Length: 122
Image (tube, rainbow, N blue to C red; front, side, top):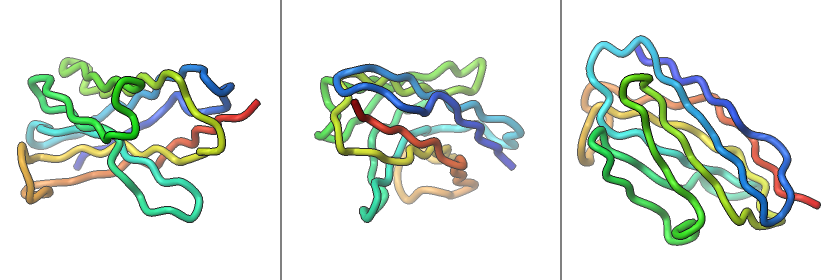
């Protein structure tokens, strides 16, 4: 079983930056795709960014040019660097780890972190 531990959430000024981290442990098989998702109050959970084990990244249109996803395979950790953060968009960010390279997800496993809240306010 995979455990995901997130850190880095908090309060940040509009236009500011924040970096989220998610460390995985206890995997039986290799983790292929890792990603970040977010859920704002009253909204559905949405994709923010994903990254493959060899470093290929994919981003939602809403964050392109502002966010950067990266990973350290030795540490089994994925990061999300968030720049130019916009106000009035408080959300909980969730880390995800999957065994597959492509959909359908969860062939062997799919796990979620507990979530970390990001609040953008002046």
